[in-house]
Image 1 (cartoon, helix red, strand yellow):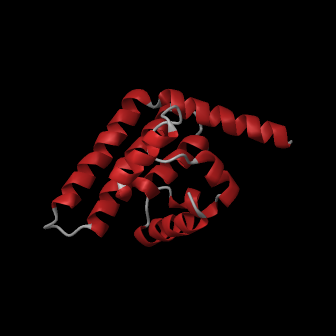
Image 2 (image 1 turned 135 degrees about the vertical axis):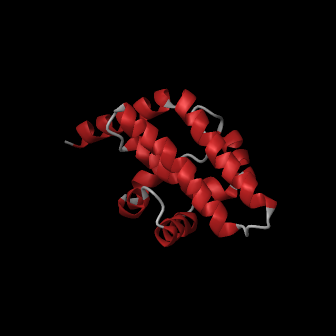
Image 3 (image 1 turned 30 degrees about the vertical axis):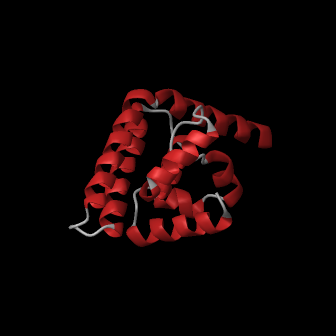
Length: 143
């Protein structure tokens, strides 16, 4: 992600009042660049995540907020489910903003956002826990 990509994501999150936008707006660039890895779990090869990003451009900002929500999570099941529900809700907001009601891409993007959120519900708990652990270790190292 470039500085320009990050600025664009921040502008989009603020303009659309995305759920969790404050995470993107208030987190330091260095932390975002470290934590956010594109659409898909960290264990996916980088080339695969880049391909998913290219196939789902409307979900890039959504994925950044989602990665930050995992990183700054509190470790509860409620928080985990909220991060994933926000992924779906934000994906729908962006799809509706980018594509007119008559454009099939609007409905495809909405479906993909919901599908990815459901996949996170099913298989994302390990990534969620790992992100929190990484943040806690970084916090302890800086103390």
